[in-house]
Image (tube, helix red, strand yellow):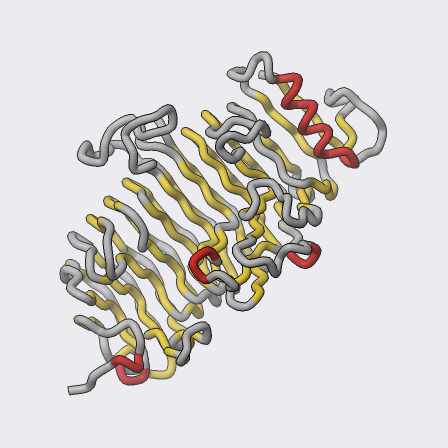
Length: 401
């Protein structure tokens, strides 16, 4: 293993513990590390970055990088204009775009521990340009671990609604019994918006939906995965316009003991083929909605296990981006159109004061033809409408008998 040190100093150094790279030339230090490890790309690299604030235009990790930040370390994105790293999705740390010389298109192993990633939204001159987004980290790696990292001052704009969803902490891998994602003890907060930008704060993808090429899945979707592909645990998301957690094109993922507060939705899965997803022992507090699974069009959503969670519903969500404005129901769990073989068990659904369907609240919904889930030992407080079949997406479309 090759070890490099970077310190909050202007004194020149060679990257050793006693003579670290100077932090006031952070991007130069990262470029030097890339050059010095290029001849042995398979050798693991550890980069230890001391306390302090470091300014960067964004960088890509090598094949086997382990980055250690002190608790007081901040990696801050400078104003990158229209030329940010991984533009238009500008990140502090990101696997390189395909065809770019900044680093490998996929990592084999990656680890980031500690510190803060500051996307520095207020200083970004391109934040009002259609489709431009700013986030903390986006990694494509066979194996990836992100622990105790805070992501702040990130955001997007709603000028192009189709491309306005930001993913401030996102990790993708391939279908392989050896691949693994672990996200633990992280937080995402201080979202910024311009005319309606929204987000999924912590998101994972565990298949590439193709069985070919150098970075394709090692077995097809028709072969069920045996091992856990991702564990997302003990994370915290606050004050989000969008979804606190989510996944897409994923299999055998476990979300456990996560926390979301004052978010539009606690959890969303609406894209691609997904099966054997577990969401347990999470708390969704003062959120408009809890968990949404499915969509109106296409995909696969099979064998979801939603157990032991707490859903505290605040109010129906008023979607001001629509013309005319419409109001989405407040709910604990909604299955839309395609989900099947779902178990919803041992959850607590709470609101205050007491609410009913006509008020825009329900506990569990299987809608638009979604298969009725298996329900066991769920509890409801303040909700007079426990289970809704075919409740519309918007309250304005509710037809009372």
